[in-house]
Length: 143
Length: 143
DNA sequence: GGCTAGATGCAACTGAGTTGCAAGAGGAAA
DNA sequence: TTTCCTCTTGCAACTCAGTTGCATCTAGCC
Image (tube, rainbow over the protein chains, first blue to last red):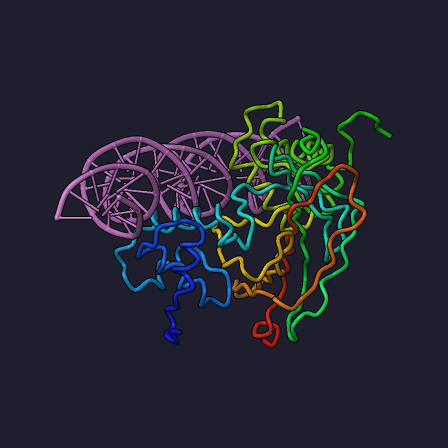
């Protein structure tokens, strides 16, 4: 069993998913497996010593990993901001938003209730809790 | 009391916040007040009949509304995607992520528990629930 | 070692959102 | 109603995360 930091885990992970073990992919997986928080493409690029790895390669590798469920996006990417009037929301929590993964429509679930998160580590002061649900809307779930 | 669709509510809202009542702002607020779901800048622009209103104006008006709490972003804008290995998460729910509004750092709250959303409207099939917390991290809360 | 599909690098592109600046308009005072 | 000041708007040019097309390279099977 190897005890150095770059274990065989990433290599195995790739093989299990029938993906080629390339330098770039192994480097990315090694970095993510040692990460204590989600990393952006930029952070990953900085942490890769070998600066020859192109950002496109990192994006493509990450997307491949996403497809295979090896990795996921810690934050749903929402390049396009959506706004609504604030009158229905409490100061700390808004109603959850549901986005359909098939048709892309978003619905406000005004009546759905989510208790505030519990077991928070000490010292964190929560000002706002936001819940995002993904799945199929009634229309798309039928078909 | 006026009964037409463009009520005085938006005008009052602007006055309460010491904001000038301009054509663009009133149009945007009217649209949002009739919206059943969060709208993007593009959608708002489409719904404004007067096509002469510039997209920059809409962005700036929305940001002003944000500053005054009249409006909020239904989805936290995350232009930059952050990735992490998927091994710690259940198929439906990942641990919550906390983003500090002061220093911008994000932390994984691995031990925090959030019950799944209840009182869902009929027909919605949830595949994934994501919780985003905002506030102050222990370091920033001290200062 | 040779071959081939899949992976990579490069450059150019896309598009949401921002910035600087000049021109325009709201609204309070005269 | 007019004047005037300040805030708002429009335009054009920019920023930058992420994508695409295409030529080149390489992992891994034979």
